[in-house]
Image 1 (spheres, rainbow, N blue to C red):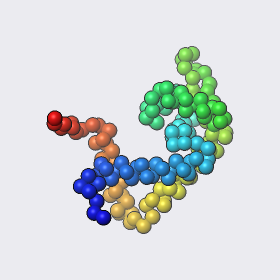
Image 2: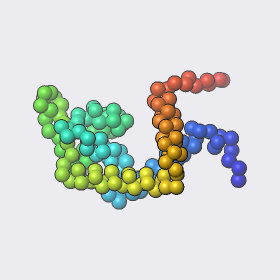
Image 3: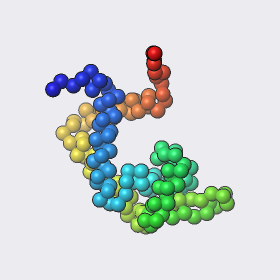
Image 4: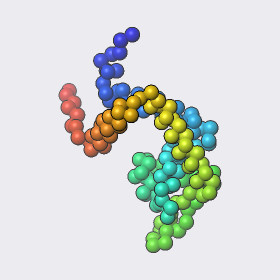
Length: 153
Protein backbone atom coordinates (compact mmCIF):
# COMPACT_ATOMS: atom_id res chain seq x y z
CA UNK A 1 0.00 0.00 0.00
CA UNK A 2 1.29 3.43 -0.97
CA UNK A 3 1.97 5.81 1.95
CA UNK A 4 -0.31 8.81 2.22
CA UNK A 5 1.11 12.27 1.49
CA UNK A 6 1.05 12.95 5.24
CA UNK A 7 3.13 9.83 5.93
CA UNK A 8 5.78 11.16 3.56
CA UNK A 9 6.34 14.30 5.68
CA UNK A 10 9.77 14.39 7.27
CA UNK A 11 8.32 15.44 10.62
CA UNK A 12 5.91 12.50 10.57
CA UNK A 13 8.74 10.09 9.76
CA UNK A 14 10.90 11.43 12.59
CA UNK A 15 8.06 11.38 15.12
CA UNK A 16 6.97 7.83 14.29
CA UNK A 17 10.58 6.59 14.25
CA UNK A 18 11.23 8.18 17.64
CA UNK A 19 8.04 6.62 18.99
CA UNK A 20 9.02 3.15 17.73
CA UNK A 21 12.55 3.44 19.13
CA UNK A 22 11.21 4.79 22.40
CA UNK A 23 8.92 1.79 22.71
CA UNK A 24 11.80 -0.67 22.16
CA UNK A 25 14.00 1.26 24.60
CA UNK A 26 11.22 1.36 27.21
CA UNK A 27 10.70 -2.41 26.93
CA UNK A 28 14.40 -3.08 27.48
CA UNK A 29 14.60 -0.64 30.39
CA UNK A 30 11.54 -2.23 31.99
CA UNK A 31 13.61 -5.39 32.50
CA UNK A 32 16.02 -3.27 34.56
CA UNK A 33 13.24 -1.76 36.67
CA UNK A 34 13.40 1.80 35.33
CA UNK A 35 11.63 3.85 32.68
CA UNK A 36 13.05 6.23 30.04
CA UNK A 37 12.82 9.31 32.23
CA UNK A 38 14.50 7.59 35.17
CA UNK A 39 17.24 6.27 32.87
CA UNK A 40 17.77 9.77 31.49
CA UNK A 41 18.26 11.09 35.04
CA UNK A 42 20.80 8.34 35.78
CA UNK A 43 22.71 9.11 32.59
CA UNK A 44 22.66 12.85 33.35
CA UNK A 45 23.96 12.31 36.88
CA UNK A 46 26.79 10.03 35.73
CA UNK A 47 28.68 12.98 34.28
CA UNK A 48 28.22 15.08 37.41
CA UNK A 49 30.55 13.71 40.08
CA UNK A 50 29.81 16.63 42.39
CA UNK A 51 26.08 15.97 42.07
CA UNK A 52 23.40 18.09 40.48
CA UNK A 53 20.56 20.25 41.65
CA UNK A 54 17.09 19.10 40.64
CA UNK A 55 16.55 22.30 38.62
CA UNK A 56 19.61 21.44 36.49
CA UNK A 57 18.22 17.96 35.88
CA UNK A 58 14.85 19.45 34.87
CA UNK A 59 16.57 21.29 32.02
CA UNK A 60 18.62 18.25 31.03
CA UNK A 61 15.77 15.72 31.06
CA UNK A 62 13.13 18.15 29.70
CA UNK A 63 10.45 17.53 32.32
CA UNK A 64 8.47 19.78 34.62
CA UNK A 65 9.84 20.43 38.13
CA UNK A 66 7.00 18.45 39.75
CA UNK A 67 7.76 15.51 37.46
CA UNK A 68 11.45 15.68 38.40
CA UNK A 69 10.50 15.64 42.08
CA UNK A 70 8.53 12.41 41.54
CA UNK A 71 11.33 10.90 39.44
CA UNK A 72 13.91 11.62 42.11
CA UNK A 73 11.66 10.29 44.87
CA UNK A 74 11.24 7.04 42.94
CA UNK A 75 14.96 6.72 42.23
CA UNK A 76 15.75 7.49 45.86
CA UNK A 77 13.24 4.86 47.00
CA UNK A 78 14.98 2.32 44.73
CA UNK A 79 18.34 3.23 46.26
CA UNK A 80 19.70 4.60 42.99
CA UNK A 81 20.21 8.22 44.04
CA UNK A 82 20.74 10.08 47.29
CA UNK A 83 20.36 13.72 48.20
CA UNK A 84 22.81 15.77 50.22
CA UNK A 85 22.70 19.39 51.39
CA UNK A 86 24.08 21.89 48.89
CA UNK A 87 27.36 23.22 50.33
CA UNK A 88 26.61 26.85 49.38
CA UNK A 89 22.82 27.02 49.45
CA UNK A 90 21.13 25.69 52.56
CA UNK A 91 17.75 25.70 50.81
CA UNK A 92 18.90 23.36 48.04
CA UNK A 93 20.15 19.83 47.84
CA UNK A 94 22.42 17.98 45.47
CA UNK A 95 21.46 14.67 43.90
CA UNK A 96 24.13 11.98 43.55
CA UNK A 97 24.19 8.47 42.13
CA UNK A 98 24.63 5.74 44.73
CA UNK A 99 26.93 2.81 44.00
CA UNK A 100 23.87 0.85 42.91
CA UNK A 101 22.80 3.79 40.73
CA UNK A 102 26.24 3.90 39.09
CA UNK A 103 26.04 0.18 38.32
CA UNK A 104 22.59 0.55 36.79
CA UNK A 105 23.67 3.64 34.83
CA UNK A 106 26.52 1.61 33.29
CA UNK A 107 24.02 -1.09 32.32
CA UNK A 108 21.67 1.52 30.81
CA UNK A 109 24.59 3.04 28.90
CA UNK A 110 25.49 -0.38 27.48
CA UNK A 111 21.85 -1.09 26.63
CA UNK A 112 21.71 2.24 24.79
CA UNK A 113 24.91 1.43 22.90
CA UNK A 114 23.56 -2.00 21.94
CA UNK A 115 20.31 -0.49 20.65
CA UNK A 116 22.33 2.03 18.65
CA UNK A 117 24.48 -0.72 17.12
CA UNK A 118 21.36 -2.66 16.15
CA UNK A 119 19.74 0.42 14.66
CA UNK A 120 22.64 1.46 12.44
CA UNK A 121 23.81 -2.02 11.45
CA UNK A 122 24.27 -2.12 7.70
CA UNK A 123 24.70 1.62 7.24
CA UNK A 124 28.00 2.76 5.81
CA UNK A 125 30.11 5.11 7.93
CA UNK A 126 29.53 7.82 5.32
CA UNK A 127 25.75 7.36 5.35
CA UNK A 128 25.69 7.29 9.14
CA UNK A 129 27.79 10.45 9.34
CA UNK A 130 25.52 12.26 6.89
CA UNK A 131 22.40 11.06 8.70
CA UNK A 132 23.73 12.32 12.04
CA UNK A 133 24.65 15.67 10.50
CA UNK A 134 21.18 16.13 8.99
CA UNK A 135 19.44 14.93 12.15
CA UNK A 136 21.44 17.40 14.26
CA UNK A 137 20.46 20.22 11.91
CA UNK A 138 16.77 19.25 12.10
CA UNK A 139 16.93 19.00 15.89
CA UNK A 140 18.57 22.44 16.11
CA UNK A 141 15.79 23.93 13.97
CA UNK A 142 13.14 22.27 16.11
CA UNK A 143 14.77 23.52 19.32
CA UNK A 144 15.00 27.07 17.99
CA UNK A 145 11.38 27.10 16.79
CA UNK A 146 12.63 28.70 13.59
CA UNK A 147 9.42 28.31 11.69
CA UNK A 148 6.25 30.22 12.38
CA UNK A 149 3.27 27.96 11.67
CA UNK A 150 0.97 29.48 9.11
CA UNK A 151 -2.46 28.59 10.42
CA UNK A 152 -5.34 29.83 8.35
CA UNK A 153 -8.96 29.71 9.32
